[in-house]
Amino acid sequence: MLDALNALSRRIRLFVSRAVISFVDDTRTVQYVQARINAVETTGDMPRYAEYGFTSNPPTGSEVLMIFGNGERTNGFVIATSNAEFRVTALKSGEVCIHDNSGQKVYLSQAGMVLDGGGKPVTITNTPDILADTPMLKCTGDIIDNCNTNTRTMAGMRAVANLHTHPITNVQTGTSTINTQPPTQPE
Figure 1: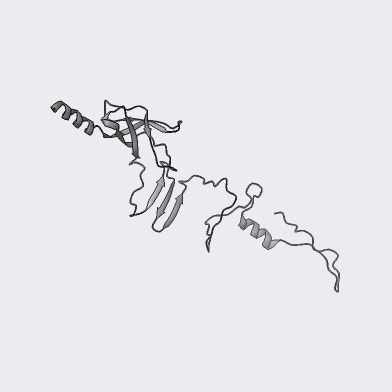
Figure 2: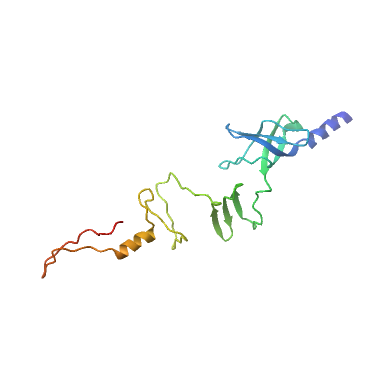
């Protein structure tokens, strides 16, 4: 009886464990990790499950929380990951932040949403339309429209428009009408 209780106690103690990621395989339909539980025990090929619609590749050194079915180390999976080095701190109750290890983040704060590119470009692709339904759109830098063909900013185009002229030749008097020529300034 004591042997059975000891075996049950061991399985309960081994049911949940913390470890540190040493390798991530993100090439398969389910991500697999290798994690170091302690100085002498390392797991291999443990599936890491994530919420639908969210995926990440945690950097080496991230902590994981693992569950082992029946307390058997060969029958486990990762249910959570964390990395204290890159964790965004001081969130207020109810706030959410999606972030990575290079400073990029989407912060849903109580004061409003903040998109921080971490000093990298932000690209919006594969959308037929973008609507900014707001009474005021503000930009602290220049805007270039038709950027694949246009080299001027909107401020530069405004300067050309404000200063451009239309030469009028063969001016006539009376009620005659003359169309102007195209502007002489380049776009």
